[in-house]
Image (tube, rainbow, N blue to C red; front, side, top):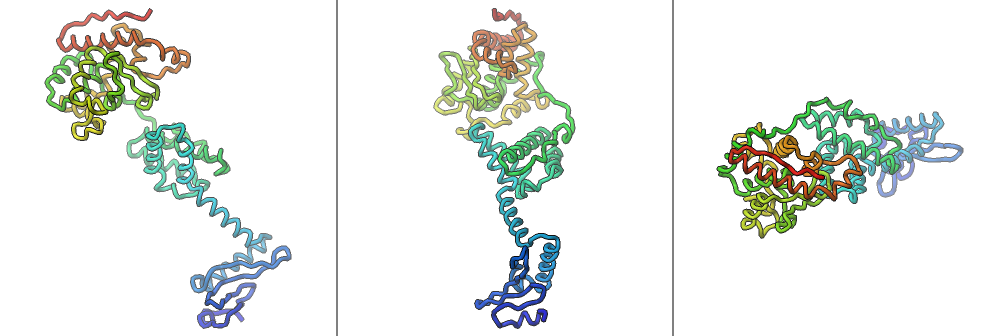
Amino acid sequence: MKLTDAKLRSLKTTGKHFDGLGLYLELTSAGGRYWRMKYRYSGKEKRLSFGVYPSVSLKDARELAAIARKTLQDGQDPGELRKTAKAKAVIESVNTLEAVATDWLAHQTARWTPITLQRIRASLAANIFPTLGSRPIASIKPGEVMAAIKKIEGRGASDQAGRVLQRVKSVFRWAVVHERIDSNPMLDLMPSEILKPREVKHRPALSNSALPEFLAKLAIYDGDVHTVQALKLLMLTATRPGEVRGARWTEINLEAALWTIPPERMKMKAEHRVPLSLQAIEVLKVMQPLSGDRDLVFPSPFYPSKSLSENTFNSALARMGYKGAATAHGFRALFSTVANESDWDADVIERQLAHKERNAVRAAYHRTTYMIERAKLLQWWADYIDQRRKGADVIALPQRAA
């Protein structure tokens, strides 16, 4: 006799209460009510569990039993299929995209600096993990990744979109190598076929003709002395804004007139030695009584343990009337333009700008040469700035390398 909801509610006898076709409810002495199904496969008697009554209703139990019988008719063992599904679920629970990405980042620890690891982890946490991080990595489709990348691009962050895409592809490639997934479905996702082409916009740079007026404004600028002196050193050394903002007294050797920037603070991750002109040394001597007892040469006036903020230089330029017309980074372009037009050796200029040399042989050579030439170049440049401040014409007679 088949079971009914009324009979199930009134059951008191322990044991098996059959519904038919192998399905039964087992009532234990402790009061548990468990749905079971007996079946035979390859001549062996087996059983399945379908949950606890009343959480699993009579109707639900019959539907689950019907599915199991259909599996048997198809020649498969429903119990083994369930074990396989459970094992797959366990594997997928530790193979989510976020879990695999975390293992990938850990694998890169010895290769990347802590700052780089933090930046990459943050980009994935902000743009990928919220929608795809909890998903099994094997279940993620290329279209889903592409949608996430397009969303970043939609915010106007095309560069970041491209970087995040490459990082996601690296995670999938690493997952294949380490047998976390069988194949890499992201191979065909190419930035050029996903992201819109964009016009490269160079940072606005001060023109040579505008230099005298700028120097006059800088001389009377009433901003913080740390900012003023940092701007002067930025111009005199043709370094990057971040390299000046993060300058430390331990990097400075006034006696040798040399500033040695360590690899971790350089864009190309290679040590950069900057000869100091007489004018650059004067800037540093002005800073000595202000910050000589601190780590940073140009600490923030508000938070002395921190460097000047990233926007400090450009904010000062804006206050002087150069918003949209010049940026701090643009001083490098001004230096390069004037030095090249004044017939200085292009290799010396490029080395001073710390641009990456693509030729490996030349790169090795550059590490041990040009210091004398670059010292002459930067002293010439400092004198040039002084003369432009006075409004005098400058006759450039650089001494080229032999």
